[in-house]
Length: 332
Ligand code: UDP
Ligand code: MG
Image (tube, rainbow, N blue to C red; front, side, top):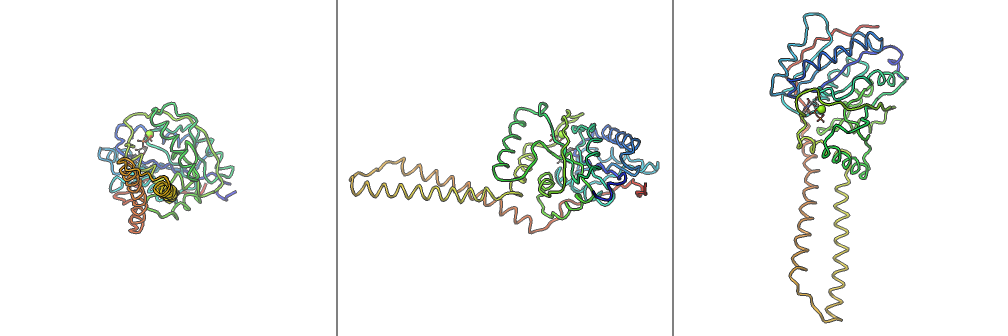
């Protein structure tokens, strides 16, 4: 067991927020209350804290966060980071993890809308103290999801599985990690980071805690359809080159198929003295092959685009402001 598991650890709760002005104050008070309860139960140290990451919100989320942080009151348990622009949930979460990683022993990532059931946090901490470096929160029902979301998610997990990508079905980003696991995550330097996949692939000792997903406490979902597709595509392309292999296989299949057809045509013209001057038999393959080629080029282009983005080595996020209201951790 890791040495820090022998004593109660400092917990950091990392919460990415984007345009959450309707709920952020409520979320802060619920999470602070939760921290207080866990401190009282001697499950975490009194230096535990909350870290909010404003992912370039366009509404008044940041000023509400600023207002909520009582730096002068000496309570010292909330810090906040304002990112320069909207970089998306994964990178915003990463910003918080990198910022808090060195200041805590245990790190929890959760959403601002409190859809993740905090009542299982005690159980998650129990798993951590038993020796798990990563504790995955896994949803045990999807009843609150729309038909579309439930089915596309299921299909997506099947596709990932088929492509040989290791995933944990129904785990999003409700996750508790040890300091070691968080600092290991920083060695994954890719721009298009798919954190939930990396945490599974890292291979540290882990456990699962099941929870029921709650309804959003207010406001509307901030994951647009295009953001969801982009996250899904990142998940595939950052872990699998299967789509590229599929193109080669498709090419081979079409090539072998056309060889058979060619032999058949030569045979027919020599021995059967019949020709097939049909318009459709000429035009259809042109469209079919043209479509396959364009699609294949598109997939190859996607991977080239990813390589291009990665070679630029641009920062994954830029920090605009930091409000650090956290006291220096002290020995328990
Ligand atoms: N979020 C973010 N940046 C974005 C979109 C979302 O930081 O560009 C945050 C959002 O504020 C919330 C979390 O990511 O805390 C999950 O978003 P949401 O609840 O909209 O996703 P869903 O629950 O629908 O998957
Ligand atoms: Mg949500």
